[in-house]
Amino acid sequence: MRVRRLEITVRAAFAVAIVAVFLPTSARADTTVPITGIGTQVSDLFAINTHVDSVTYSDPQVVEIAGFGKAVEIRGTVSGVGWGGGGIVARANNAHYNYQIPFVARWRVHGASKDLVMFHHGGDQTPIILVLQEKLRGPQDPHRRAELDGDLAHGLPALLNHCTYVSANRRGLRGDGTFSATYLTSEVPPLTQAEVNALNATIASGPGTPGFRQPGIEAGAPVPLAPRNDAPTFRDIDQALQQVLGDLMGKPFRIRIFSGNSSGARLGAAIDFGRNAILSQSVFQSVRTGGNQTVPYDRSKPTIFDGFILGGFGYDSAAERADAALPISAPVFFLQGRGDERYQHPIRMAHELLMKGVPLNDLVWIYEIKNMNHIARDSGGAVAPTDGDALGCYVSAAIRNMGELLREGIEPPVSQIAGRILDGGLVFDVADGAVTNVMPIREDPLIDSVEVGPMLTLRQVDIGVDAGATARWQAVTAVLTHENDAIIGPSIACRLGGYRIKFFANELLPFSQAQLAAIYGTLNGYRERVDDVVAGLEALRLYDPRVESAMATAERARGLFAY
Image (cartoon, rainbow, N blue to C red; front, side, top):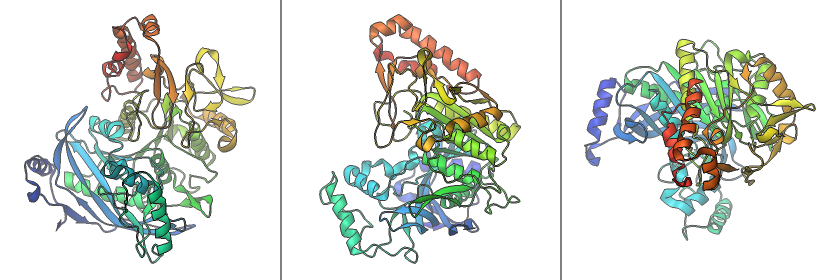
């Protein structure tokens, strides 16, 4: 391993990348860059003191990206001390830990801009769930490579928009299946033999390789954790990667966009709005965890990110998310599917911001999308059959619009928010003049259904976790400029059948060939309809067909038509 400071021009970086393709493995070496001065110190409900020690990365290589072409890629790890987490034993949480977090970064071989997109994937898996998946899947366990979860829906859009793309793995595993984070033994005592015995009994009861043993589960070892929602840790990591990549490419980034989905969106909200909902003593509490300034909550210091794009956002507890003194630091786009049980949660967040004096029309945009579920078909974790619209088309448009807003002050498309008040309550229009107040939204209740399970439940406006939804919707829509409808993509505008809404991708239940022929005639007729819908959405700057063209979308249906 070689340790050195980086002084390299973008031209040299590209040259190294191209040569690296032809170098034998023995000739390659990792580069470690020591990091100083990046950390988070906050005294609130918890005393937080984190820092980054180093960034290690591989020699750049040229890789082929499906749907794009050649890009430069590096992979590596960020090492340091973080805070938070949920341990593999119940006694371990909300403490400092050592980490070695894997990441991937990519940029164009030619034409890379000075803009950056940093993606933060979803997933709330506990460490024991990760271990059980390791036993079952071994080297094929996707949690080892969660930094690749956003490749299609976020990485491809970033490259198409000439941005550098970065993603880190927050699941708690490294590529070899070992834990990426363990608590400091000075704060969390090591695993006991009794705890190890109980963990191994749980592991033995699960399916997979007989006799499996997870490295790091042994008496006296530091307690492993999953750092999935830790804002102090990842605001540090993101700053360190911005610094190293800026040096590597020979230019500081002009704009830096945070992109996140599901738990990654909650992480982004904690950074942008200044507070995180932390589970402490079985209750979620609102905690200051650093915010978006390089020096926490100091308005005079630079921000870490200039804009936020949050998808599948969840706001599932009473703990406030916005800091009273600094409730928002940068503009935010919410991309929220109506096929998501958390459909109304961006409205809930916008309402809190409104109550804390934030001018919504200057800083908040909400884009609701019909038939978009929590994990779209082009997202990491989607489980076949995977149908519905491609999230990446909407993300790419959002990256472009956010970039234009930040660079040139071009106003983004107005928010797209559906709903109306009926008999004093919020309802949503669906097919054939019907209405519903149950989420996820079945756009056509006669042919659409919801697969309820551990990850997906039915929720109702003004009931349970969505209590107060009507009043919040009324307050937000009264001030936030919007079109009173959700975005209608090809899957609904050009229906091929009903949909079974699932957490991990929607499933198409196709019409018969006779029904499709009656609606579209032939595949060509369907293709023309898709082309019209995509062209209309592109004209509204809500959809980017470079990610998936109308022809490619229509081609997915070829097997459904008789000719």
